[in-house]
Length: 93
Image (tube, rainbow, N blue to C red; front, side):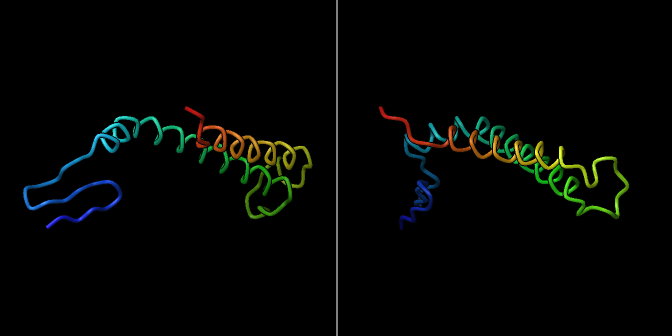
């Protein structure tokens, strides 16, 4: 019995990995680090934007209701989106 799932092949003999999956698994820690960093960057941008818009009045902060933090936060979200696009787009071989 063979079951293929996400590029992995499960057989009665055990788990077999194809060459392409092996190369992906070797790059996986790098992609986890990049994705985590971009997620934190976007989350910081969303937080800054929310504080600048005054959506976090329950938390005392000098960033509440300040338009410069809306601009900084929006810039961080856009930067994270651009970096994500640049790192995940297919490049010609």
